[in-house]
Amino acid sequence: MTSRITADLVLSRGKIWLGYGTPTVEALAVKGNRVLASGSNQDIAPLIGEGTRVIDLGGRFAMPGLNDAHLHLISTGLLQQQVDATADAAPTRAALIAALQARAAQTPKGEWIRARGFDQTRYDDGLMPTAQELDAALPDHPVSVTRACGHVTVANSAGLALAGITFETPDPDGGVIGRANGVLTGMLAENAQNLVYNVQPTPSLEEIIDAIEIGGRHLIEYGITSCMDAATGQIDGMTEIQAYHLADRDGRLPVRVWATLLGDPGSSIVERCHAVGLVTGVGNDMFRIGGVKIFTDGSAGGRTAWMRQPYHGEPENFGVQMLPDEQLFELVDRYTGLGYTMVCHGIGDGAIDQLVRAYERVRAANPDHTHRHRIEHCGYADDELNQRMLAAGILPAPQQAFIHDFGDAYIAVLGPERGLRSYPIKTWDALGMKPSTGSDSPVCSPNPYPDLHAMLTRQTHKGTVMDASEILTPEEALRAYTEHGAYSQGAEGVKGRLDAGMLADIAVFSRDLLTAEPGDILNDTRCEMTILDGRIVHDLFSAN
Image (tube, rainbow, N blue to C red):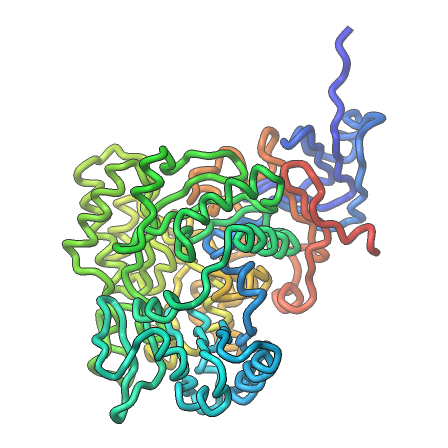
């Protein structure tokens, strides 16, 4: 006699979205860590046995767990310990200074005060902090304040001195040291930031593991079950790989991670990873080696993204080109030859063009390769670049949270014609380029609701509409956050949908994200339950 199959977990009486193009269902059954079946309550009832846990969704909306396809998980965790300089916490320059002074009052003299998240375009005067301003407010501590984009840091004189930076210090390759009127301004852009970072304390292995756990738990609270760590090795090289393996081994890895390896000259961990067999695809469903990241430019809001045309009001400023063609091409050729997918940072159209040319070379040399090379951010691709990307199988990996947080700044620094067309996700979606989305946390909060709101409205936090022709439908927006994220990681066969046999990663929300008003999604939605690998890892049901 054959015993009947019963589910370990059943979600019933809900509105469950299995994935793009599929009607919603009432119920879903999970066996182990996989979806067993879905359908009506009556369809799933025979799968309920004595040991089945049944959760009555009470009409709530459930869907595949979100996949933040580009963020910095370790930094997200570590930055919980730094001063919050974001617009929500410090909306004015005075508020930023007050927050720094409050931290200094609790910190022994001579120790670093660090902050992250300011955006000078949100200030009334539109000006960045300066070394002189920080000196006056915090005379007893070295200070560094990093812009939201992560591409610009301002240090005070004590911090500059510890880094050995004087007015005569030459700009490093791919970096800029701010100078004006014969003095240092404290501004350090792109690679120049490393001069200060290199003299700041490096977190220990245990602190990095803690950061992975803290950051991952934060994501789980939003229904995010998978992410891409966008520059593993940037903080302390191979220690980060060790930390991930230990976190996974010890049950301290709260989310699935596709780890991008830092491949920049001078700080690359690719060679050491390759030497021990860590190439794209190696790992398990919780932690897997992803692609290799090389930075090719900066950020638009920081006026360091490499543009073909100059920034508005700055006719000599085209941004920062991080690497010459020959060096980038050699690195891309070498890393792809070692078996890696490329996931390089490129925001401006100058950087995107350089990356497309690099990837086109790889395609020409091996037309049958199966790598899904990505361009991270991909902010300013025109029609010609999009067609070349499509022909070469290149995926755009944008963050629509940027539209919400920084859209008005893009218009200010680039002018309306270019600024309004930032991050054209509908264009990519219509072309079949499978654009993903994410937060780039800690550049933006991993909170998915501003990202979803931006995809549904193209509105900035001020309400400016950034080209309404780029608005997505709700299903298209959710597909970008799930299925397309999985595809960009080569994992569409196991996650991103809730078809039978797929991983049981599920998020339950307080609102129906397919029908809710975008403003309600932004302002009045929460994730009430997160299921990862068939296990409930976040639960607000029992608190209600």
